[in-house]
Image (cartoon, rainbow, N blue to C red):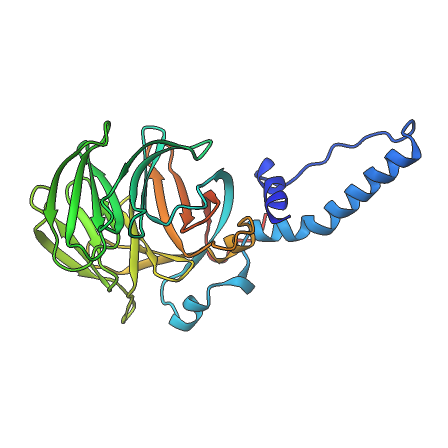
Length: 305
């Protein structure tokens, strides 16, 4: 039912429009069915529309407890795409019309190229069973893939997904992205390290903070229009971070998406951000989520359309 309501919502970005019909010549039984269906839509439509706009009542408990200095934006869903509900998503990016996804879990970790419209896997590289896949990033034709506790970074040729190299990486690997020059990595703490793509050596690091409060649990990363977007582990929020000093410029509250996820017993935490630089589209998904959402930000204080 949630998926049906969400599907109705996405048909028209500005809302759902119903065409009027003349019931003059409709048989009583058929007319009764139509009245029943219309009644159901009137019952569920307001709730679906509410989920598509700012919903302050659902604002993340994490953000409330943090007492944020930075402003908090909500999201409006523009489009929804299918996503593999069996994928333990650890990394995501958009490249040449496809999604590239890294998944975790021992014995199940992969790097995959996915069709955006169907969610189907077009090509897949499996990691050896002893590796737990983590964040991925594309830089100069190469895909870099972190592993969790195995202290290894794999390097692939982007078009063929052929593995070409690997680096040692001290500590845990969580999220990975790039600013076009360096690889930016998180390790579950409040730190983001900038690394040399040829050696994986640390060049510099920033500590992420909102006001005077450090923000830990940084996980999946994406570099978007000069900012680092970071998922906070176990929370339905994204921090938009200044790469210069680690300051959180603003927050994105995605807690309203929970109401739009097709019922699925395994649906887990938010953990995937992808950016289409050519169009400005932003996509999000999560571990075992059956859907992937294209989102638009709704700034704090904006009135509902």
